[in-house]
Image (tube, rainbow, N blue to C red; front, side):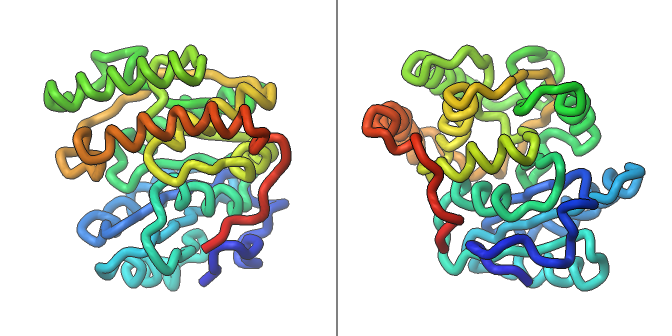
Length: 263
């Protein structure tokens, strides 16, 4: 088992791995076995060598043990662990900086976007794009089931603020289904500072700032009522983090790469 802050383990040779699927998890014991099964079924249908990198963000249940059980059965699954819960953004950062694939994709453990949707992101990457993000906003009719009205309205409000404050033109910054060329991921995530749910906006801001070719594509998506994002609890901090992105840029914190992820 690898530890955060260390290079990717020898269990996966970066010269051979086509795709790494990064899955950040926190207390996901109730669904991680099914999620891994679905991801592995998708990867097994691909002709290339692929891997799954699960980042356990300080879970207090037996999530890590369940992932370890799968990793003992297949070398295609690796596990990184944070000793304490540090935020989804930090977990994704750890995974992306330790991934071995030529292409890197992160997805939520609930698989709101089915793994079969990954092809919609990978094809543009193979044709020359550096960052491709899934979007619920481009084809709302592909959302089933839909979110509750309050959550949908709060999501739209945050996306409006994100576009305004960070000067982004993406219709949906928060869909947890994004893919990167490895070099772009290294440059972007090594500069990432936001650890919470607003990290998506920061990495898109950095992608544009660094001049990477970006594309937003529609994906099928289904609401999971067990989401860990709560508008009233997380909303104020996420808005504050939008302002922090602008401050970080003004203060020059995005000019040079930071060190490998810290636990």
